[in-house]
Length: 177
Image 1 (tube, helix red, strand yellow):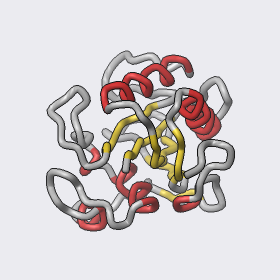
Image 2 (tube, one colour):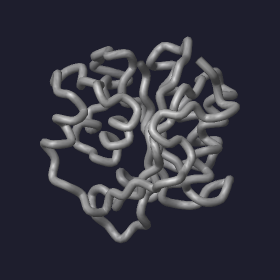
Image 3 (cartoon, one colour):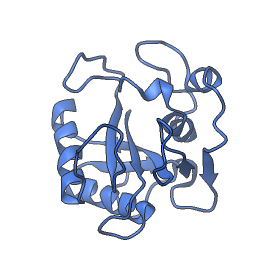
């Protein structure tokens, strides 16, 4: 299984952060990255804490013939196409696409797999748990539930109910199994 985390806290070319993330999924599909399922969307406060707007986050399970480095290059290309400008670490952004896990591969990089901070981020782990409740961290061996339990609760992380991609639904028109 291949998982990509999606996040945004600024409007982008499609409108709201959530609309821009949906556009990013369509762009990935056009690039040969099939979207198999999508978590619920979540609202989260910035990490590290700042006065930036809240983020919209989610995780997608994808299928592709691309190798990990090719997939990462595609993620960056889509980010640029949608207006992402990399300035300083943790800056506000209209789109952020991160390769979290590529079939359990462990790589020193590039890309580094699994993503080096995924196990520390509730805004990645909660949507990942929506899609793959039995997922285990390829290096640590811990389940996603154990990883979540090991982190401090985040009252700023809120599942957006009734939104697209509820708990593993295939995104219509964006790739089928």
